[in-house]
Length: 569
Image 1 (spheres, rainbow, N blue to C red):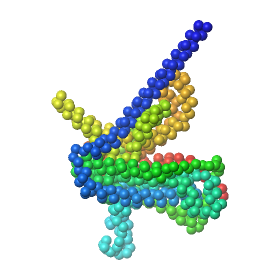
Image 2 (image 1 turned 45 degrees about the vertical axis):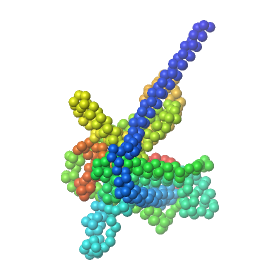
Image 3 (image 1 turned 135 degrees about the horizontal axis):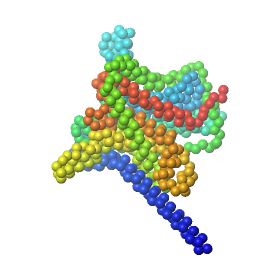
Image 4 (image 1 turned 90 degrees about the vertical axis):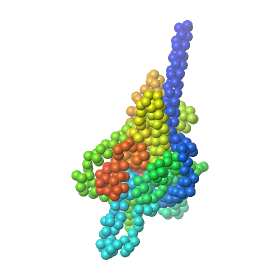
């Protein structure tokens, strides 16, 4: 009896020790996740502090001179892009999801391809094609015998309207992808009831499908507007003075970090308002499937003129947003390849590939840390910190770059002054103006992308597998390495690939934070195209475009998996 009591006491002691060790392991993960989240939020905190307490306050001057113009232009740009992306994205999504017409199977993935082209690249291409000396106006003058620009009217591409058109062509896929997914997921019963009540195709779309799809469409439009707010290359090339352009004007033109931070603060207000408007648009609204009847939807078979119009409606965005720009870049890139595929180009390509690879690895590692910490019975505070760490994706690159540069420069200057005073030596720039600053900014900017992929992968792993590993004596770290990582390899690869492509395209943050005499493909294209030398940078622009095609095709696979829609006839 005494021996049995001793055994029971030993088991109880072992159980207590294991529970204590597991609890201690979870605390370490929570502390690490909280510290990482605080580091990620540092740029936003530095922008807020610098804007509120600038060294030289030029806010009254900005308000009385340029700021109202920046705000009005930004609002007009966002309104135009919002309307354009909503119309094109929602219309094409409805046609692909609910109608049958020639070319539909090709268009369902081709309509996503314009997402692979940065807005500033398509702006450079269309300016080169449509300007006075370009092939379009030259052909018109030759056909009609016009001699000068006074003899005819032609729309000015370098204008606010031109910027709206360029951004709409490459940003509508955000709305298209989410709208198409929500249309595919809508209940068959609801659509059948609308038909029995006498609703035609248009009324069913307007009164049933569109209201049910409003939350997803609102998210798509919000994402497109955030990308619009982030753009610098297009608005700078077209001389459209938005808030983003204002940040660069005040930072470089006036040399005033405080003023730039104050304009950046206004941009953050825009971001907060966008998020608030998107959430408010679906406040107290819930959309549920009320039936498990999930048989394939009978698509509306279009014939004759309607089929031709549907094909044209889907063809034009693909043609104008991807095929034509890619064809022009390919023609320029391979027209005189010896002169343009130079050693400088390959050096810039190596810089971009190295930065993108490093950022993808760091971002996926940080996202894995945060997502796994949240899985370890995290408190409400830890979960809130992890959620906030993904807000960087909503912050424009120029704003984020200033938020990174200010604390890094403060640290470098303070350390340098301390070493000079105590040891008589200079430390130089250890953080600001380095590749490390770039990678940190990219990580903060794109963490939400990889975090979403990692959380999705973890969510598919049943907790019982984790409990089994723990019962075998594995620590949380060992469980992650031996159980979770092998099972979520696909999600990690997807998140890393998306971050890789986004990093390849990023321009505003790179322009502010890159080291001296260090260029990427994006900055290389920006510099040459700004000097009207598009042909010289065509290979770099083409490489950026091709790098974006792969994740676009992956996105189509994800969207298409929302629901299988087949023909019955």
